View 1 (tube, rainbow, N blue to C red):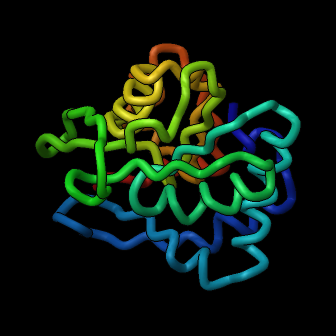
View 2: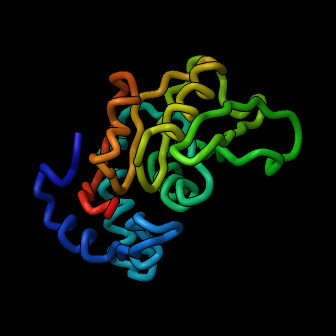
Length: 186
């Protein structure tokens, strides 16, 4: 499901606030920079509001934000819908006991960690990140949540890069995005 297909008038403004940085972080990549969106309080609020409108009343008890930009969007969504916010972090960033999930990226391997006990069996979870590219990070986040017994209701991202087919890797799990970008690679 995609908000851009709903023709919400706030989406045009949102699209104009995302800066595209060519050849970052390496040649051939058209980096989708959300920091320019965050500089505009109205556009940032509208972004959060569109997610909140979708998830309010869906009995979501956990919003899991993926480091680091998932924290930016996930925290205010969690507050607004009355859910707890659970950070999913890179290795050795969380104190105490953690469980880990490794995953493969287009340029190597990575890992996400979650505090043991942060999510309980049977909780309904929403996974939030700024962008879906190949889908590896979202898949790892879902795997981690499902390993502790959570039901992943949906994944939510501000931006999707459809050319990289990340949605296909989610094995049918619903994905909600606000903006599609077709200029991710040169």
